[in-house]
Length: 262
Image (cartoon, rainbow, N blue to C red; front, side, top):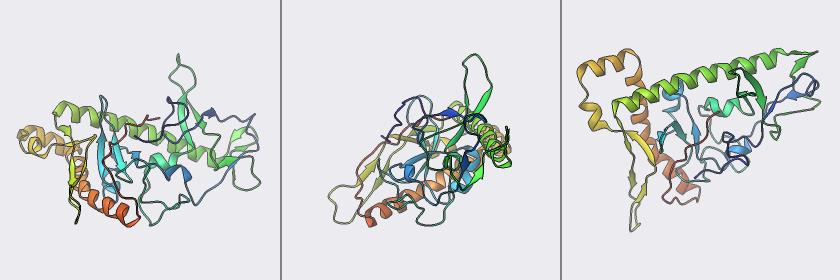
């Protein structure tokens, strides 16, 4: 399982959450970083359905096990292993970076349970935000700066993509296409193959058996394209495995996590 935040109710990566305030953070700035240390030991990252096509070129896309599965981009096959970043958290090669990663350390959250209003919050432990001399100001006077407005817009788009992902997962569940996944990788000179379980995937046999009207509906609403992106991306499992072996991180059987989405 993936390493959990200190507060189990927080999404992965987030160690704490506080609302952005023009009074408390009037002089704070956000700065771009060339590394993401929080990714070093993270082998699976939440993914929205909007990103399947772009992400499928770089990562295997699977679904978490459990009652409410969510899409995940695998950055490694084993807990604590990420083959896309180096020891400092810098990307080894240019790849598509999931929106969940790009959103950090910000997110929209409900501050009151009796209200549906979402407020822009952030993780104060992140190195990208603070009372720095350099970086983009978060406020102009008592108003959000252009940079903060852009962050807010991105977080709002992420929330909308999350709703579409939820609808996609509901339809996938209704179709009965999800099954427990298993990938077996043969290695020369190894007595046994490496077998990975603990995730879910689309059952290709059941997909072929769907009625024509159901397939037509899936084609029209774009769902079929997402399913194929997921299935094609599974071929990358062996590439990830090879990258782990090359990095000296000999893999063992693991289970994909079910992270808390925010």
